[in-house]
Length: 467
Image (tube, rainbow, N blue to C red):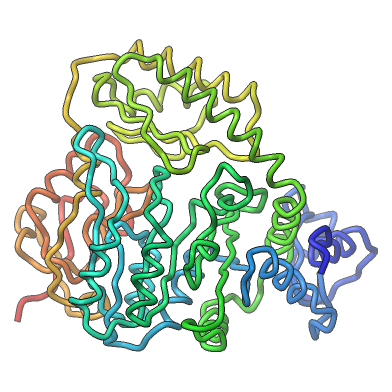
């Protein structure tokens, strides 16, 4: 197979350029009296990029090219982001009641996968840097101990790299998991670009994992909502994984969205090293400029393209800094009181990074205040929960709504996750702690968005009805 090919993207382009009279979905039919610039790009996969019976197999060929690129036995194109891949893997590796070792720094999509599959998590969590309130690498021996605690586990689920670019020793984790006879699965949502430049860490499969998901839209050149699910045969049953994937997959996938995954794969296969060399250069420049700001911590990262900034030493409020830059047309991937993450990718330019650095430095100087200790950020990452029920049991249990002041000591029935990054601070089945409720309410009052809960002000919480 030739990595310069883009069978699905070519088929989509041919459809858009042709004189077609469709009597199919989508209902707008790209008709001149209905369509705008957005609708004109829309096309279905079946009866669009391929024929009604999918006889051209353009999606299948595109997925096989992607599998070849990553040295895998299977690659599926996800139309619902890494969420779809994470949930498919959870459904594939075990059965309801099976225990699984899971990093507690998981994304909410992994938690949803546990609810859907009925797997029983044994949590492992990283240490937290007291200076920044951000997570450090997860020690392999902690995973080993969790596997012993789990007994007959069905797998290990990790998040690598973290949202702020910290990467654990995936190779060592793979050895630990394989020594226990179970697969290592990695949520590599924030590392789709890994492995495409010698100065970057390898991707998860190259490091020994059995499967990973990667959000193409986060750091590659693909539409929002697109991701890759990549797996090797052996400890992962690929037939069952394919069945789980289809169970979650829409029967009306966007041909345009999937075509961007095909094209993004080709770009990385043919130009990835060149594009990432420029991203690495820009990231190094930004780190150098921002390191000159007194008391601003540019967080150490195992992914040198990642830029995460810890503000407590400056006294500046990250949400106020974000507002300053928002007014100037500059957007952050994450902002809370203590942390800012401007995401650098292959799409960045020197002019854009220069503009970011200048505006950020000016705002930090204007907002500078008294030094403080990390606050809410630590509360999210430094979670050591007491699990009483599985996520699935708690999700389906009878629930009631109580005032937040009454929630500590009760079992959570819902999820509360500051977004971004979407890591559940409170998860179904865990005992609610007073400290965490107070920290979340403080964060919400300061402007952080609290997601996935019935009451985003956290005046109330949903808890399991006590017997």
